[in-house]
Every structure is written in C-alpha cells, then in structure tokens.
Image 1 (cartoon, rainbow, N blue to C red):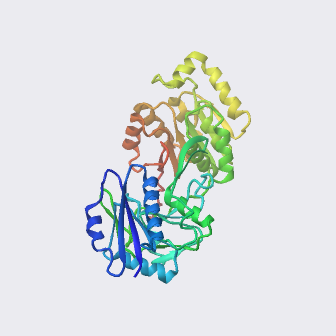
Image 2: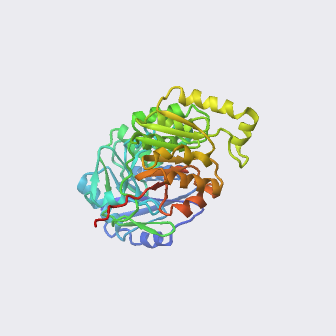
Image 3: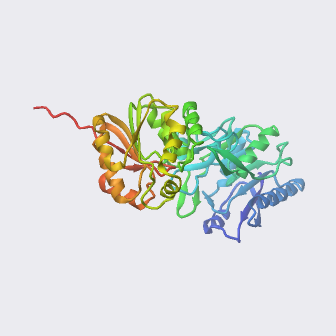
Length: 428
C-alpha cells in the first residue's frame, strides 16, 4: 500500500463539484491524504502543497505527491491506476494528459521544440489530442514537457526536495515587436528536474479525465480543430525581404509583409493598387522574379486619413520621391504606374489575363474598394490570387463580401484573399 499526499490548489475556494465526488472514490488500494491551499498565486499554492507533502514524507506518511487541479475531474479510482502505471514504468514522474479548454484540441503536454520563428525557450510544441491518440496510451520522450493538472511525483526521487514550482516571464523580440512571453510552471518543472538529473518523465491518457471550462474537454478520444502545433520557420529569403521592407514607413505588420513576400515569390506578374512609400512593394520586390506594377497617385486617401493629410502637407511629388528612393531606383522589376486608381484598368489593360497576384490597398471607402476589385478581376489570370489589406475596415469588408463571396481572411493579419476560378474548357 502506497501513501499519497494529494494537494488540491484552489482560487476563492472554487472547485468543480465532481472533484469532491471523485475524491471520495480516489482509491481502494492506497492511503490518500488530502491537503488544500487557496490563493490567486498558483505557484505559491503548489509550493505550499509540495512542502506539506515533503513534511509528511519526513514523518513517514507520504511516498508520493499528487498535485490535482480543481477543474480537472478524473475517473473513479484514478489514484490506483496512476500508482500502478508509475510502478510499471519505474517512473519518478507521471502526468495525466489534459486538453486545454478550447475547441482546438491542444493539450498542456508538449515537446521542448522551438516552433516557427519564436526565440528559443519561449514557444514549445504542444501535442494535440489527434496526435496523442496516435501514440501509446502511456509514453515518454527525452523532450517531453508535462503538465501539472494531475501530476504524480515519487517523493523518494533524489531531486524531490531540490525543485520548486515557478513561471518564467520575459519580454522578447519577435518579428520586430516586443511581446510578453511566458513558460508556465508545468513546463518549467520538467526543465528544472531534467537539469537536476531526473529520469524519464511519463505522460498518460490511460487515466481518463475531463477538463471543465465552458464544457467538459476529455483526454480519451480524437477531437479538436488542430491537427498539429507545428509552425514552419519563415524561410531566410522571406525574413530578409520583410526586414528590409519594415524599414520603410507604413502600416503593414511583419506577418502581412511576410505574406506579400511569399505570394510574390512565385508570381510572374504582380499588380499593386496603392503603394504609398513602398513598404508593401519592397517586400514583394525583394522576392519576385517577374514584374511588379505599382499603381498610385501619391495624393493619399480622400477619406481624410494619415496619407491624405501628409500628401496635402508635403506634396505628392515628395511622397512619390520617397517611393522611388525606397523601391523603384533599386528594384528594376518594379514598373511605376503614376495614375489615379480610376484609370488603372486603362493603364494596365495590356496585362489582361496575365496577372497571377494582385493586391488592393488604396482608398478604403466602399466604392473605391469595389472599383479596385473589379479592375483587378479584369486583369487576373485563371487561378490567380487577388487579395487586399484592412478587411477590418467597413468599406473593405462590404466590397469584399459583395463581390467575392469565396474570399477568406488570412490568419494573424487583416488581409483578405480570393482565388480566381479556373474555368474548365467545354467540349463540343
């Protein structure tokens, strides 16, 4: 018979009703002692409970410390199952796999791998429920990061009194911005005890749990909208293009510039309606092997936004000169088309049927966006991509929804995108 000190942290004494019911059915085989700590500082609660467990170990009353979050409801007799698995695997640490409380199906069980362009240590790869259900019911990995929602720790482990629970917070540089970043206490726990020489850390879905939020999120079935948490890093040529473009004054985010650089990379003929000082044009010119037709009057918006004010104060020729300095002088593949957007169709009619990528970012009023979309549609090659900026603007959204019902938004940006249909040939 094992002796388990089970610690349940709460906030404002809030605890799911089924937790108390399950506590009454926690074990038939082992001696379970319960402790509770209540605070808004979760790691302090964890450490209070850890110290209580270590004190009970010293008295001979505890072999294991079981940390149990108050919104996690395991199956009856879960303690018996966790102890059995831990003994079978000779595991110093066993963590129940628990999904996060949203529709994606991501879990708090992760692999210590950098995802995408995030700086090392600040973004790891969460495992999804779809991935979890393809693995052994209980498994380990040299890079595993466990979660603390239902965590069994062998108090005989030589590192058991050498760690403490804590977060790691910072402000990091990411895509030209300063962002808050955090590694939560569970992943820090895995990193810390690994550094202290802990053996393999095991995770399991054999212990069925439900994580309660707006609904109950189970850990024993395939579900979720996300297949994998893997995000490919941005290719070096795209990074270089974005970093250069970001030096040009404008309003496009890093992710939006990366989108343009990626689309232009495979395009042979690009049309941009609205170039201003060339921030977006630069991103495309750095990767495009074909021609880019940049259309602008450099008079700014008629809606009285920042472009119109600056053009009125400084003059269109000054703004146009900055565009040349930023883009056109260096990039010979950029064809400057100095005209009002109303005449863009006439100026570019020789391109009809050849444009494989077009980007609309001029005046954001409904009538002007509608006109620009229709202009580009007349120029597009079948299968080409027509997109634009600022879908959050009412005039833009209305025009896109009216003219391009199949358009979609590009995640993490305010860009919309539409694929021009390929019309199949009709046989006689």
